[in-house]
Length: 486
Image (cartoon, rainbow, N blue to C red; front, side, top):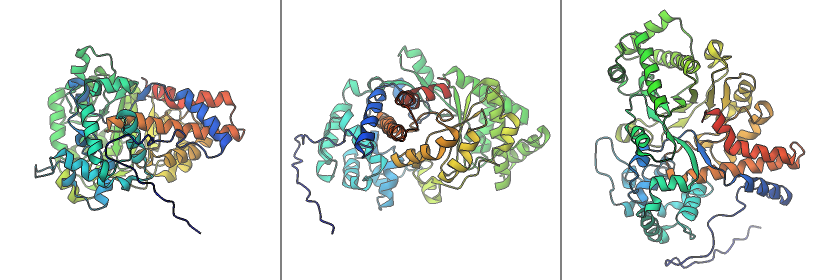
């Protein structure tokens, strides 16, 4: 019979509780022997530098190095992991301070936003967001009482006070987090002014960009034809022609490489690729740039451009990332009112075996090509992605992504891919985040999950102790540096 567990009452008047938010053994196996091995492995990698090869932090933070404004703007307002959960429980985005496309009224009082977030913090129980946030609250801001409506102001005041200090500015946090390199992601039309400013600043931190050309590759992207025109203007290329358009991409890729880029990134609804003849591709280009494309025309053009980008990667050595399978902006109403990246991107079924074949037939055996594949369709891990990466030299598997960068999702990724692709056809971990303070937490979760998995393999006799130790280091650090050519 179930017996309820009494919950002790705590005084949240402002004093320390003395009870940490985090367990030292979180995410480690329950079995004592396996847990001991996981602890040893984790101890050997927990302090390794962070390599963050793909993400969405703002390069302006590091260029200006200004204090972050307040707890709400730092933690709540920009994080779709947070506001999508609250929205699912009836909290309007306006009340969370999320800006509207039309400039309409939203909550601007950061303390009110924070209190609303704290009131609903229980919604995040057993989610990765809870792990990341508690890690941030305890290790970065020194808080050791649970966040709730009754502790909202205690949290706000403590975090706000620290954000006003110089050692909580972006560059200081970069160094405190022990980040070795961090990659941001900019669109093809970005002038990269913040990266240029950083380069001239003399600061030793390494912040590189990534080439994200979706706005000039996807005919369904808002303003696509205007974006093509601007691409021609900033490159001096005739983007009225197919060859001029391709040359514009080559010039922009070179410009991004001059600002540290080693990779490109492509966020497509599918992994479809195509390898049309030059004449057929030119005709398709004229269609999509002269009128609204049909769904089939848009799909085919995106497919052709993935292959074109792969061919350019063979030429210039940039690592290619394909983030496929997100059905973007599922709610037309939210997209119209708030724009992109507002929590309504939903996973969809994705094919890789047939979809990637045209690209792989064209350049899949080229020695200078690396294509890192991400998926939001876990059903393809063992059926498609692991077998593909386990034989094509150019293919690598990106880590569990987005909805699956959770402890259980990371564990499933290892269980479903390792037996076919091994460890060395994967690329370690990347945090893929806008939430700068959570980066150490996300890497810590990945390191713990991998060490727990390796410990299981040691106990089962599938790995020696020395192999597990080497793998722990590779998964936490070496593989990302190698795959992204950092």
